[in-house]
Length: 190
Image (cartoon, rainbow, N blue to C red; front, side):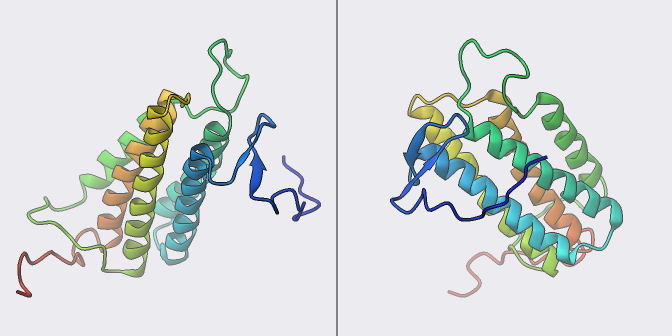
């Protein structure tokens, strides 16, 4: 359990923060950008949950919110080459596999897609589409971090990719299992 007795520390007033390792970095550091986008994804999920009606669906989103804190900790702690299991909080491939199972379980209840859909519909669906878009940004930030030569755990990268897929399917599901989807009308306003 984390205890936060003091919310402001003033240590970030000069534009710096510390990674989980204690290393000071700029608040614009690519690693901070990556886990910051994960935090934004989590906030979007909180908004979606305000509109969620099915208890099992809400429980899935609540679990994912907790996993996003794990993911943020993973991204805030650069993996070390000699890191032993349990040295740092890491996202696992089992969590990625669970997302895949949830995607499949939701998708089987949806009609096949015959057109692109707009990020609209019910309030829950719109919030889930927003979460998906922010999650895709978090994924891009993590990829950018890895491409810059910074270590990023493989399961963290896979989790972000699968989560954005799940959020797309979840948004469709939250649109009355596809019945309230808003379809793109190509060139309709020319």
